Structure formats: C-alpha cells, structure tokens
Length: 261
Length: 270
Image (cartoon, each protein chain N blue to C red):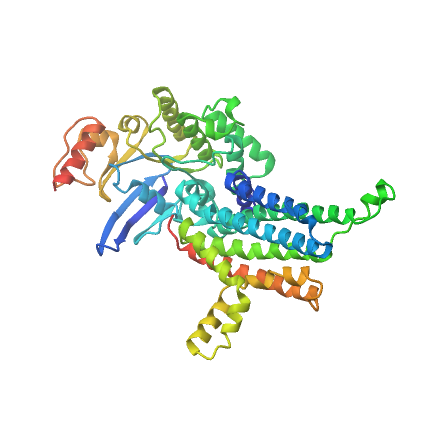
C-alpha cells in the first residue's frame, strides 16, 4: 500500500522575540500514513497537532524537515485538488447559505457548473443537513449544522485525503454519533483520513492506527490493538512497556510518563 | 477564474457591512444638500454645487475604500476562513488579487452610485435655468458637464490607488495600524504641491525628505482636479492627456503595490 502522507523530521520552531528563546511546536516528527487509513492523531491542547496539519497544507512553513502528500511535496498546489481540510472551530462566511458556501468552494476547485450542483447536493445529503436549511444563512445554524456544513465543504471535491481537526467536538450525542459514523464511512470509499481529535472513544471506534504527540514530540504510533495490548515496539516511552487497557488509559499513561520524564 | 470567485464572494460580504452603508448614505446626504446652496448667485451656486458634490464623493469614497479594504485579509485570518480557502488549490497571489478585485468592485459600485446621483442633481439643476416649452423639451433640455464626469472618473482611479495601498498594508499590519497608515499617506499624498515645493528647498535635509515623500508616496493630489474643473478660468490645457497620464500612473503604481502585497503575503504564515 502506498503512503498517503510521509513526514520526515518535520520541525516547527517559533522565536520568542521578547524572551529571546525558541519555542518548539513540533519536534523532528517522522510519520507515515498509508492510503485508505483513518489515522488518529492524538495529543493534549497545544501538543502540536494543528501546527503539523497546517504545515502539511502549506499554511505554516516548517523550520526543518519535509513531507509528501500523495507523493507530492507538501504545500504543492497540484496536490491540493485531492485534499480537503476541516479546521477546528471554523467560522464560515455567515451571510452565505450552506449551498452558496459549497458553491464558492467548488468554484475554487474549478468544478464546472452542472457538476458543481451535483457535488453540492451529494455532499449536503451525505452529512445529513436538512434540505430546508440548505439555502438558509449559516448565521442561524446550530453548532451541529455548522459542523455538518464543514464536513460537506471537505467532501465537495471528492478528496482522496482528508484532514479533519476535531470534527465532533462540542456536539450533542446524536450529532456526535452521526458525524462520527460519516467520518468512519469514508474509509469504505477508499479515502484516507488524518483525524485530529480529543474524542478517544471515537478514535478507538473508527481509526485504524493512532499516533500520540506531546509537546511537539511523537511518543507512540500503532494500531489500536497494539496500543491497548501494550505491545508497541516502534516507539517506547522511557524504555517501558505500556500496560493493557483502553485507548484513554494508554493516552493518559503515555502522556504522564512523558511529562514526568 | 479562482481570483474572480474570491472577488465575487468578497463583494457579497463587503456589501453587507453596515459601516460601508453609513459612509455611502453620508455621501448621498452631502450630495442631496446641494440644492440648499441654490440661494447663492448663479455662478457661485454652480461652483459650490460642483465643489461640494465632488468633495462628497471623494470623502465618502475615501472612507468606504479604507474601511472596506483594511479588513478584507485580516478578517479571513482572524475568523480562520482563510484555512479552508488556502488549503484548496488556490495560489496566494490569486487570494490577494481576488480580495483586491472584490474590494475595488465594492468601492466602484459606491463611487458609481454617488456619481450618478451627483450628475443627476447637476442635470436637474440645469433644467431649472430653461424656459418651459413643453414637458419633453424641458426634460431633454438639461446638460451634464463633461468636466464633472471627468472629475468622477479621476476619483475612481484615485480610489483604485488607495485600495491597492490599503490591501498592501493589510498583508502585514492590523486594521487599526492600516487605517492610520493609509489615511495618513492619502493626506500627505494629497499635498503634492507642498511636497513638490520642498524638493527645491535650499536645506538638503528638507530637500531630500521632500524628494522621498514626493516621489515614493503615491501622488494622490494629481487626481484632485476640482479647482481646474470647477473654475472655468483655470483651464487644463489638455484634459484628455492629463487624465491619461494620471490613469497610467494609478495603474502602474497599483500594480507595483499589488506585486509587493503578493510577495509579502506569500511569505506570511496564516
């Protein structure tokens, strides 16, 4: 299976001008995500998850390292037509309707007019946004409806690789489970999903592999089974084996060990 | 095509901003005040009307341009909407061009609307001076002064230059800083006759400062042709050549500012 994402030594440092020191947001990150995977990218707030995604999409420039997406260098414009991104807590253009918003994004992909309409319809139906809301201003949408619109815009170009940053956070249980199922179903369509999330139960349910990042440093990578069985050999934390348990226990234990290091 | 899609979306957003409507309505109100000066002697009345009308369009256009363009890029970054745009196959230059085009189209709609109202007022005023020989003859007896059309046209290009300047600053400053920078440069740029006189000053410090200001900052003063247009005694020897030179100046200067804006924005992390 080919690599959808291949990251080599990716580093991002910010210079604190006042304190005259460097702050590392991402430290020498090396990671491979195979095509067709739903890959969970876990970490606490400020761990470097969003910074990593933004570097891969060319929104931030890395201090060092390199990466390829679907075989092309990160930030390359030609590969962007095969990608999509749902940022965390996005505000969309409030005065637009979901339909107009998707039409705008579809134009950015240069999708022809007739095809545009078909794609908009498919995307909105897929995220189960009520048809009566399609042409209403986003300003009046609930959080769940906005998030559905966000995922719909990420599907408009029928992407091969999706970056989803906290797609289910802050949703009611029904919306949460529906959107999780939608994300989970993408694997069946042959898409690769790079999912950054705090919802460990979701990750455990839908992800094929998981990485845990803390303070910009990659701590652990493996399948859910490997991680919860405690038989990870790729990366060990302080040379110790992890105990058996669910993903939440593994996450807490891994991060605490790193914090205590 | 992508820049055009961004421009369309920008116009839709910009036209919904209330602050822009405040300035547009203020512009209309100032133009509407024109008939109040009708009590002046015919010649004075014409001068005041023309001067006030062009000044109203310029003033409202100035604030509409600045308040529209200073927010176009920073708001996208602040609301994170830029992430969903730049993560798509959109080149950064297309984004800057789209924002500029959208901002300028918005400003143009406003200047055009004020210009049409202003010219309509002048037309109506010219009707009053004719004798009544039937409705059709009365309606068609008015005239629109060509020099006033030229005046509006010059304001249009002045706003093009200001929009490019504001977009350039918006790629690396906050809206507040941008407001004062753009407004300040517009003011200094309007004093071209003063800065021109500084270039011949005996004091070398004053002379070189004057030279730098006069030749580096955009020369907005060249577009203010009200005096020459309004007072028939002060004739522009060749109005078409004067306009052509200023339009070329505005186009070249705006293109340079946009290239600089693209260079800066291309290196900016969002």
